[in-house]
Length: 124
Length: 164
Image (cartoon, rainbow over all chains, first blue to last red; front, side):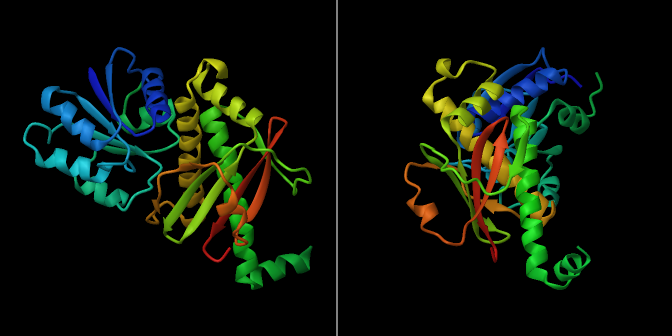
C-alpha cells in the first residue's frame, strides 16, 4: 500500500531522522514526510493537513503518544488514519491496549528497515 | 565450576545479578550495533578514570524503580554521533548532538527492560536528561558499574535497578 504523506511524531530529532531513513530504505522513498515533536503539535498539524500514515512515539512531553492516538481515534476526520507506534515502550500502556484502540502495528526501537517491512507487510 | 553453577542455581540473588549483567551487556551491545553500527564489548573493571563531560541519565519507574547513567568520553560520543548522522561531528549543532545521546539512552533502556523484565512487562521511564554534575550518580552507592569498549574507546554504564 502506498502512503504518500507520512507524519512522524517523536520528540527526538534523531529518532525522526532514523525513522525517515528506515522508511525510505524499506521502500517508502517517494513518500512526503512531515514531522511533529509531540502529540500537541501533531494534532495542530492535522487540523489543516491530511496524511496517509502516522508514525508515533509514546513517551513525549506535552501530549504523549497514548493521549494523541486516543484523540485521533475519537476525531471524525482522523479516526481512519492508520497509526504505527514506534517506541522503546516506555509508557503506561501495553501492546494489547494499543491494539484495542486501533493501532495498526507496533515496532520497538531501535528501528530498522526490516522491521518496517515486517510490520507493514511491504515486500520490495 | 560445577559448584559455582550449583551455587548460582540455589541463590536467587546471585542468579539475578548474573541476569542483570547479561541484560546490561546485551542491551548495550544491541543498541550500539543497531543504531550506530558500532561493535561494543564488555570489559572487566576499567582501572583508569573515564573522563566525561556530562552524564546521560534516565529514571525507571516501572516495573521496578531504578536509574541508568551513561558516562561517555568525547571520542566515544563523536564515534556514535558521526555513525548515526553520517556527518562530521563539527558540522552538527549542539542540540543535535545532545538529542542523539538522549535517544541512545532511551533505546538502550527499552532494550534493557525488554531483556531483563520481558517484553510483556509494563515499562514506565522518564524522558532522558543530561546532567552536568555526576554527584547524583556517584553519591548513590546502589549503582553497579559496567565497563565497555566501543572500538577501542572505553565507556561506563551505571545502573541501579530493583534490589541491585
